[in-house]
Length: 397
Image (tube, rainbow, N blue to C red; front, side, top):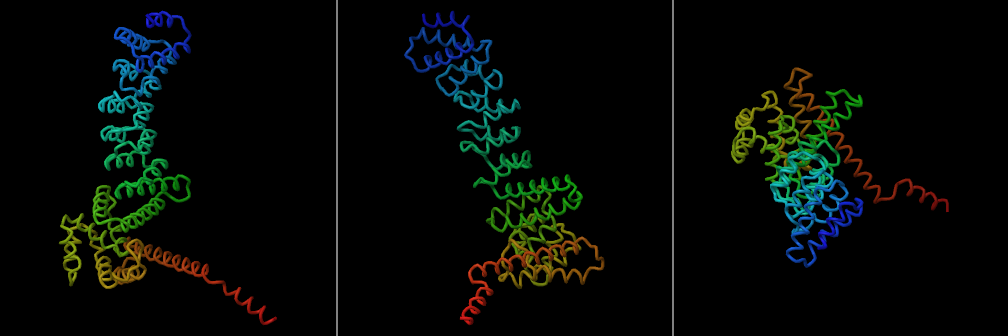
């Protein structure tokens, strides 16, 4: 009887009143002790409201019914097919939508719907993967910030590949404790590309120089990242570098000149296709024949072999005294540079140029550390000028 009166009333009631009535009807259907006949009539009224001409009414209906697992499926799916701002409430909250429903919604490529799905309290792995694959930047950012989303490395990698050039995405990803090392390195590469484009776009540097500087900065950051990684993480990182064409001779040489034997060995194993134990046995064998065999099998430039051999000899002799695997060792770099200068006849050889840049970088790093140490010492000991002034006062007295 009440439902019949409601249906007659909504024919002439204003839209705002109809919206309030729709919310009240939902609450009555979900929480009141209705008879079977009244419940069936109430459900029919809810279905009728799906065709209401006013979006205000349908929005009120969606807001009231979205979170319930007792809502009529036909009403929920009808609202999910409504305009995006109404359907978004259903896709964000309704427990009645299946995993397939959510994946299909993401595939519809409507940014508002994708963002709504990304914000669900619990988000299955397959839905998160779909968002990572085709979701808008906003949806991916919401996904990354959602503690209830199940994200695997593949999904993280796809977000980096598609939206890693955006600062908000990078910052959110780098703030994750579960970010794998290869994915973190991919973000570093994205950042270096963005910086190179920004600098060249402002005409501060020409494009080639900006790209070179960005590439060297990326390689430096990669070696630093590897220095803080486990053996398993380094192996995964090296595989990713090769897949992305970043595993260059320059990067491998930088790692070696930092004393980072793990990166050097894993790189040779990856490039040569040989087991890591076999690589280590050949590389560090006396005479250099084993190193030459692995070097050639890895496909590294033949002209760089002398530099690598000298660096391996230096690592064998001074490895225990190196300061750490994240910074170029000045003594090693200068030793290799001297060897290459003696062997090279072309002053503009790319290897020679690279080693000279390494030498300059190592000298700057060493000077910076020296000055930092002096500043730290000064903070502990009073300046000499103060001591002299104090002595002068005592003599005058």
